[in-house]
Length: 308
Image (cartoon, rainbow, N blue to C red; front, side, top):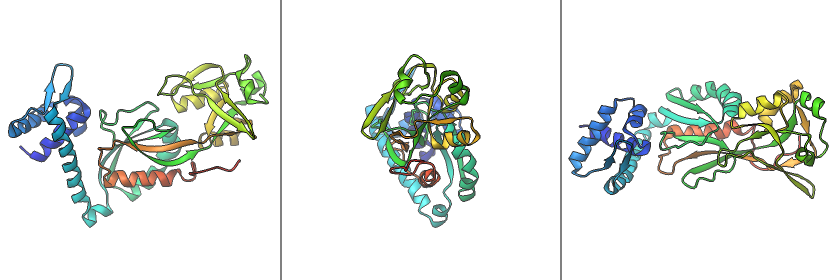
């Protein structure tokens, strides 16, 4: 038995909650993972996992051992990356999940630069706006807009997205141009709803002009949970949109979207990179996070944004 392989297999089963999922992330067979964990338990003479037909649960002894294994694996990774050649060239597989508009408009077009800098990092990119179980799905980090409320995660603030209100010309021709945000609450106008994954309900937007403040909920004919679909619905004239500048600017420039309420401001949306506290910040994860901060600087500067 290779003790390192066995410890890695055990840790992955605990994180994934499944021998099958652990095997998939390690790119080995389920039988091999099972054998490694059984050999580890035989060596330690302790049951580390309770197995049933439906789930795998860590035992009390297994939980204590897992915490030590995670630290040991992290120390081993540190020892390898401390070598000058490894420190200069972070390597390995990195699993990341990002919002769909951010992937399409910012991250993917910039990936040639990232891979030119770090050619030995293999990036597995999940693209979604859903909540991710980082441990269960073995994801190293997520990039998300909005305040990170999950206290089990470590979050690094990478910037603030300036939001503005827009509508398609076809919508304005059909429904008229609202002069005040409160008009979006009446029976005539419609918004495109964005379903916030934490609540399953559409977002509301706080807007301010001097001492005047309103919180706009609005009525909708369609609500979506994906940023690209949200933008597409607005471009199709289905309602008014609240968009970050990086999503709206190309369509404003082409005339496909018209800015509304330009003398009103909205609280910027924070952008963060989040990862589990027990997930070692390896060299590859560290350089990726630093690169995201650099990448977001032109699109989401940290702090107040001057009116456009």
